[in-house]
Length: 177
Image 1 (tube, rainbow, N blue to C red):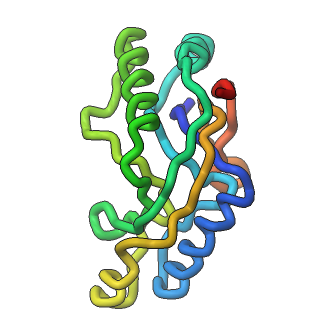
Image 2: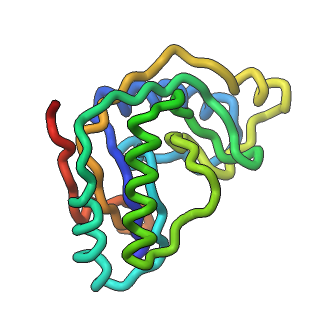
C-alpha cells in the first residue's frame, strides 16, 4: 500500500485551485493534471507500507492534538521545471502540526522526508508550458485562497480503472477552538 498523511479541502476550495490549474492547462500542450478530488497538502509521504501499518499510523494521526486553523495559499511555483503547485503562505500552525507529525512518525520508526517541509498543492506533474517566458509569467503571487484545516487523513494512493485515486483510510478531526 502506498500511503501518505494529508489535509484535504472542501469542494469550494478545490474549485479555486482548479481556476489556476485550468489556466496552466490552457498554456501546456501536455501534462498530468491532478484530479479535483485528489487536491491536498501532503504532511508526510510514507511510501509503500504493509497493511499492518494502517492501525499504527492511524494512532499516530489520532495523536495530533491541534485545533482547526486557516491556511492561505498565495503563490504559484514549480519544482524541477515540470511540477506545478500552489504554495501556502508561511503558517506557524501548519508548520507545528507537520513537525509534530514528523516527530511522532520517527518515534514510531517510520522514514520521513529529510527535505524541509514546503506546504503546497500540486496542480500538475510532467507539465511542459509552451515557452519559458510564459512559464515565468504563470509563477508568482495569486489572490489568496483561504482554506480551513479541519481534518488530518491517512490516505492510500492507488489506481482504480487506470485512474490515480486517493482513499482515506483513517481521518482525525481537529478540535474546534
